[in-house]
Amino acid sequence: DVKVTQSSRYLVKRTGEKVFLECVQDMDHENMFWYRQDPGLGLRLIYFSYDVKMKEKGDIPEGYSVSREKKERFSLILESASTNQTSMYLCASGTGAYNEQFFGPGTRLTVL
Amino acid sequence: GENVEQHPSTLSVQEGDSAVIKCTYSDSASNYFPWYKQELGKRPQLIIDIRSNVGEKKDQRIAVTLNKTAKHFSLHITETQPEDSAVYFCAASKDNYGQNFVFGPGTRLSVLP
Image 1 (spheres, rainbow over the protein chains, first blue to last red):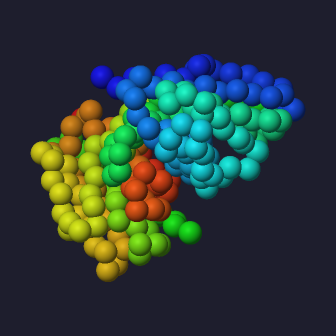
Image 2 (image 1 turned 90 degrees about the horizontal axis):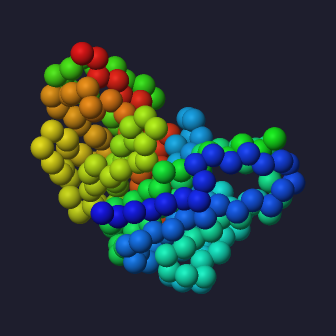
């Protein structure tokens, strides 16, 4: 069974704080993704990575950065959290082309 | 860039009836179209997908059709059951690796007993 885990289910931070969201997968997948999910907007891709130390911008990368030092771990960083980054953040992993992405349980981040 | 529209945003059907959700995309180069289902409080899961070289794909009670000329694709669920109640997201690929998607905004399907 594919397992994708995220470091927190719920997180509350203050405006201006640096926030780290971590994602770990145990299936040796080379592809990893960070999405944010907002009502009425679906899932929007923030960053993705097809290999260790590789990262590519998705559709909404502004205000975010990522790190992938190990194959199984993909971190999303909010350098200076803002209230408009309050959202549900979903990590996913997958292998190969045209294949299923497996999602983590999500982190609901609230920025006050 | 790619844009994916999805209709309707909400859909209620009686148990046993069929449900159809439609999506349109803007980039004619898109070649992979997955559908994900997200039950309340759970993570999205792939239920069916289709490549652009195929017009229709079926898996038991669910099917997807693709019209490349019109740039739209649809999800069909027959003999709906209460466990089909969920939010359904369509997506279209942005590259030739089929992993960089643009998702539609989602359709909330309610199957009424």
